[in-house]
Length: 309
Image (cartoon, rainbow, N blue to C red; front, side):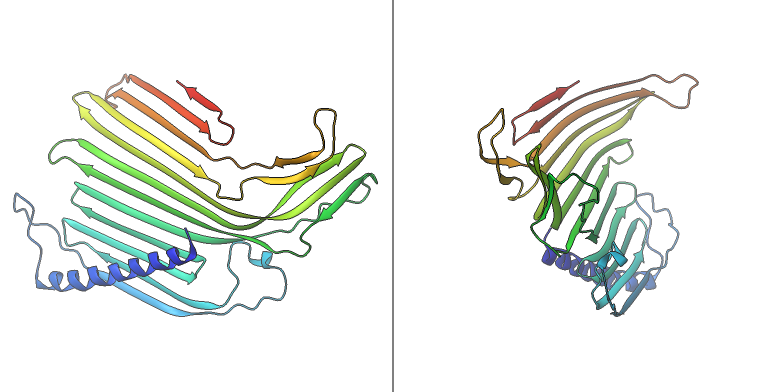
């Protein structure tokens, strides 16, 4: 998820909170909402909306590692805390914006017990260490080479989790969806060895990363008399981006000629799984349960495949 997408996501959440709170609050003032189909009176609920805005000033004299999980730059800050529940509807929105790389947003909506929706977005900044791993007392044939002396390393991590559950009216049958999206981008320190046993080079260089991961779960569950049953299908995929393979010149060895070879590969992977779970009611003294599942995993770089039951 790009930086502009994080900012756009927060703006949309803030706009949604303002619209919902602005339309729901007048409705609450008019009186208690009517009940559902049986016209039963539902308890009243007050709506609440709070905002804050400010400026965060940061003065940094040395390493960013002083605030390992902070983007140490001065910036405007803002936030919202909104809650409204004209039953059977419920809505909440919590958001905090410290800077473009420190964002939190949590929004949810529900209608009775028939629809439940929630989305949580988090974006954090991680300042990484530039390690000098040339240790005193090492043999003279070990040489340390830093190809990016003085480089500063950091990553931005975005994590979005979405869940949706639908229920059949007056019957315990549910359909649910879960989706997690994780993105990690920035620069890291890549370390590796080159050379032979009598001339080993310990190399350090900057590596740009742009990783994306998606995981989706689809499922249904229900109570059928004394038996409870659930079926889920899971799919996940990891995309390491374009810079997933490094290349360097390796000297001749007993098993290979001197040439340029790939190393430190970060492969693209994907997996699928199906699961069926059954168990008897937990209210009895004896409970019986059965779980059947199968999985399929594939490494798209090497072509390796694994199937499990």
